[in-house]
Length: 465
Image 1 (spheres, rainbow, N blue to C red):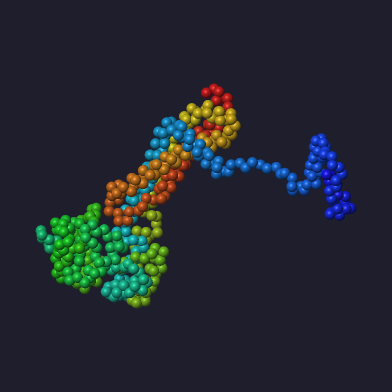
Image 2: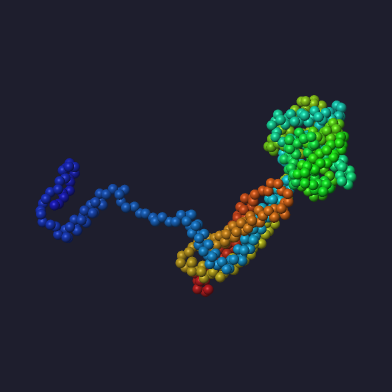
C-alpha cells in the first residue's frame, strides 16, 4: 500500500489510499521512505511544536542557606575541641548580658514601685484647698473635699482619696508615745502600693466597725511585742478624743524609718482629731487617672472648682507623681549603666573568639585549598567560614539565655535584687532578643576576619601544608 500526496487543486476528502502492488518493500526502501516521511513531517510541523531548550532548575536561596548552616554545624562538631573554650566564653558573656538586662528590669521595677509608694502611680493628680485672693483665707476644707468626691464620681474616676495627716498619742506598755496618724480611704493602698506584710490593708467595710481599724508600721508593731493579729490586739489613741482601735495590718519595714505611724479611715480620723484639726494642717486630695488623660482632667477639675468657689481663687490640681515634670526617666542612668556593663562583657568574649578563629583558619589551609581545587568559589569559602562562627555563637547564645532565665527567675535572686517587689516582671523578651542578636553579631564579627584570610588561600597552598 502506498499513500499518494494530495495536490493543491484536489479537495480535502480526495486523498484515498490506493493499492499499487502487493509486493512487500525491501528494508532499504522502507528506511528511505521513513527518512523522507520524517523530513517532510519536520518541514510542515508548526514552530510552536518544536522542542524548546530547557534549563535544569538550580537550588533556591533558602536551600543554599540551609545547606550552608548544616555544613557549618558539621564543621563546628568536627572542630569542637578547638572552638569549645571560645564558645564557653561566648556563652558566659551572653548569659551575663542577658542576666544583667533581666536583673536590671527587676531592679528597675523595684525603683519604680518605691517612687510610686511616695508620690503615687502615674498619673496621680493632687489638689489642695485653694485660697481666696481677696481674703487670703482657704476655702472650707469639708466643702472642698465633698466637691472633689462629687467630681471624681462625675468623671468616673475609680481611685481617689482625701489624705489628712496629724499626730496623736498612744498608750504603750512602757509609757505614752506620739505617733503620726493618717486618714485615708481603702483606695489609698492601691494608689500608693502599700505593702502589708502582716494582716491586711483597710477596707470599705471597716467604716461600720465600732472600734476603728488601723494599720501600723513595723516599728510600732515591734514595740507592741508583735502580737498575733488573729487575737484582734487593740491600742488606745488619744487626740481630741480617746479612741480604742483594733490593729488589722502591719506595713513592711522600710529603710531609715524612725518613729511610729498608723493609718485609719478618714471618718474615724476626723472623729479622733476633731473637726477643727481635721480641716487644718497637712491635707490634700489625690486622684489616680490614666496618663493620657491627666492634663485634660486637671484642667476640667480646676475649672469646676473655680465655678463653685468663685473666680477669685486659684485652683491647684496638678500632677504629682514621679513622672510629673516631663523630664528624663529617673531610671535612665541605671539603664545606661547596665547597657555599658553588658556591652563590655560581650566585647571581651568577642575578642577571645576572634583570636581563636584566626588560629583555627591557619590550621585549615590544606582543607580550604582542596576545596578551592574542586571548584569552590571565593564567595562560597567566605560564607562557609563565617557561618561556622555565626552558628557556633548562636548555639552558645541559646544556652546562655536559658541559663540567664533560670538565674533571673530564681526567687532567691529576685529577693536579693529587689526585696519586697509586689509586681515581679516576667523575664523581659528584649533581654533574650538582645542577647541572641548580640551573639549573632559577635559570630559575624569573629568570622569576618578569618573568612577574609580563608579567601586568600590558593590551591598551591594545599600542597605546601
